[in-house]
Image 1 (cartoon, rainbow over the protein chains, first blue to last red):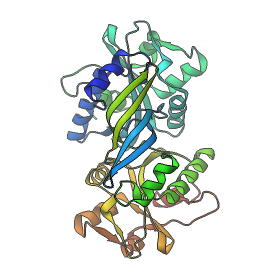
Image 2 (cartoon, rainbow over the protein chains, first blue to last red; image 1 turned 135 degrees about the horizontal axis):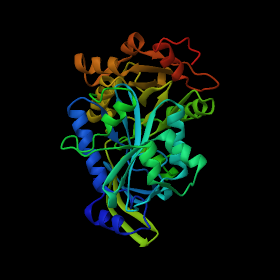
Image 3 (cartoon, each protein chain N blue to C red; image 1 turned 180 degrees about the vertical axis):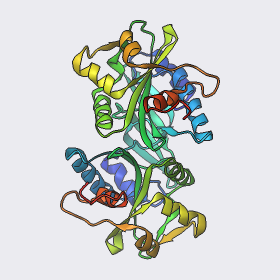
Image 4 (cartoon, rainbow over the protein chains, first blue to last red; image 1 turned 90 degrees about the vertical axis):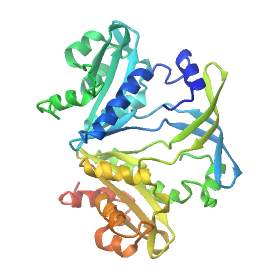
Length: 193
Length: 193
């Protein structure tokens, strides 16, 4: 967990702040699932650091640099990436309390460009979107996401689009959120990894 | 470039600080080459954010979070990753002023574990090492790096090991440091990307 408690609470209560809607629960489900994939040698997927803009760094002791002024930067990539069966995997996880559509407000244009680049370069790129109020979690592949961005509303993606073009991810005991089995099906596997 | 001048100067002059030996010149050569690969649609390779440990974050205005205490974390992955012809690419770039060997002091155990994981999961993982005093730059694949770590000295890799198992990367006008052509040869391509 990236933030000390105090910070995290502020982040999750203030709508103004980036990452506010990131959804720690979904994130922790994914982190737990990733640990399972690594333990079982199924896949190796890890979380990228949060991009920070450094402004002031002090050196109270020569051994240690202390960052005294820095800001959260808009991410230009997605949170997770790694490998499954040699395939490049790159995705982000988002939660929404909206019941009818996924608002695109928390995916910036650099991230959309990143999704285009990964997809154009034959990487496996997707979004995992949880509709909290509906208790449904969908995986939407990057090309289907881009198709909607390019052809329909850029502000939100209706849940029906997820139902038609996405894949619902079932919750299991272990791994909690088995998104790799969905990727395996998409790759034509027998869901046996 | 991640650091404001003042910070960068301090970083590059003090041996005590992580990233001190990262070598901005090699890094900028790689960044320029990566821009070329992206422009020419040859490969999509980008730099990961620097991992930061947040301690204090203030909210002077509700619109903006200001990080007032944070520290550089030991990186657990490598600096660059991305895609080439659908292959997962993951590497780090290091410079040394040593003429006879590459000291392993600035590659930590988490990064070594990362290289193992990428290699075991069929990713293309390597180090680009520049011997400044010799004006030679080598690419060493992850499995050859791991082989040395597991079988020989863990403190340094002699330059002869790079000469025998690595690949020298020639400097060109554009791309400056054409490491992708080396990867292409390793993949059995005709060096034409």
